[in-house]
Length: 299
Image (cartoon, rainbow, N blue to C red):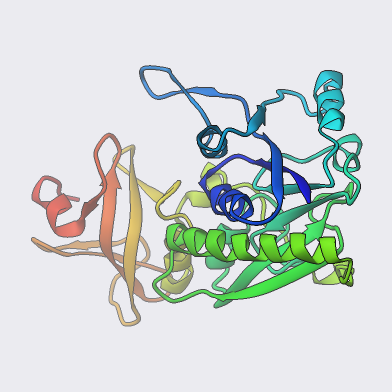
């Protein structure tokens, strides 16, 4: 199969790499434009672009996916298939270009958790199971018919970072299986049941703000779902305190948001139960284990 691969972050790279090692040909990579980052405003490339450069693959970085030059250049490649992993929403005039259309890898068991942050929301909602889905692109986001799905267990110690890495590797395997399936023609597309759909919208600052009136279990899931990035937080003396790791204590005399501090330990009361804080970060400082954090800070 002659493939154009579309993706941007680290999550996409294992999928690109597994296709590069396969019998299929990657004719081009489409990724986001380079950006200025950090205090020095250094120009940085996407993880997918870096991988493409190492493998001498043609790179396209359109600002506008509806741009005529981009569409014409894409048509010249004469691809059989577009494979999309963690990229932007493709317009119909793009995803219908290839002979076999386009498919996307999504980080949930669709139709559950449609949207920009499926991995985070699955943890935040307390799920013990999630998965990856490959589906054909349709005009409405995340609604296309399903090729393949594979389940993944969410362990109690998993956070966004660990589950993200696990899913990117499983997703790569499912990507290759899907390409092989499409090439063989021996597949049966499964329609999504919209009545079972649930949203996974973009994470906002409001999403990440901890409400200590919630149960310790729900707050723990919020912390896990947003660790290591962007980090669940609360405000103390007008400063942001992010929490990255915690432990649930079911019995507690602490009222919601009440803080108990010893020389080496930190406890915060919740609406039900309390949390023992294990790793946190004060605004303007680095992430630390609680014992180290408390050496230079008192609540």
